[in-house]
Image (cartoon, rainbow, N blue to C red; front, side):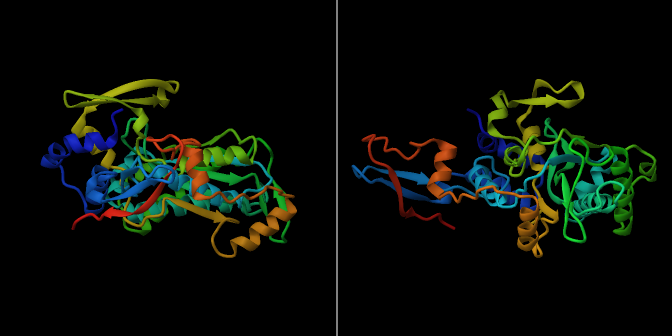
Length: 359
């Protein structure tokens, strides 16, 4: 199977001849190239039955690396389980007109932060209005910057509780199949973001005040477990996963994608390897930037107290199970992932580092 790493290793030098990377892009670029290779050092795995030894190379743990997100995702999802409530959940997506792409890309730290601010304030203010809900919901937001074709397309996915906490400490449920009017969401979001961009001194075309912005609500989740499935797919996703890469030949890369503008049809796309790397590098986030954020009753301050109250008044009885690292790995890789390849009886246990990477 061809992986992103293979393309970076084979064509990285060609890419760098014509493209310059920022420090954070260069760090991600090197990490993906070196992930699970001798460049990052290794450790020795030893069978607890026959003593067979095997060298395992270390992971880069970069958040943009397709190899390194699965375990991090599992850890994050398990933590979020404790905040699920016995209520409906809605999925709302805020997109930007393509006329803003240039200003967003050139001012990522500032512009992405303003994007989150406009989205969260839009949702919280409308939900606070008694005409719609009259309460404070719990909202989890995730920034994605790519489309299926790997081109630049910043948008924010939001998961919101179908109800919220009122100012007098009661739970107010929303209608089961309706969250907020899309046109109202779109108009308020447009006004907020353009105001924030102007306030920050970032340029944009004034015609955007009169353009229709796209905000859409997907069908509500059937139950809380479906929310976790969704979060698992979206929160730690990188621009393209390895399984979507179909092949690499003659300096070109072919990958699978869905064309949402053409009835969500499955298609294939072939681009030069250098263009593939260029598109991938568009989606490297600024260092330390938080692409997952929580608002409302899920905001960090006093969250435990609010969630405890919400669980009580919504009669939430979900059991919280804490999985060990071994159990998480078995879920991802299968029950016998650590079975000794030599004797087929014992299990491979990690030992001390066999050597360390050099400077």
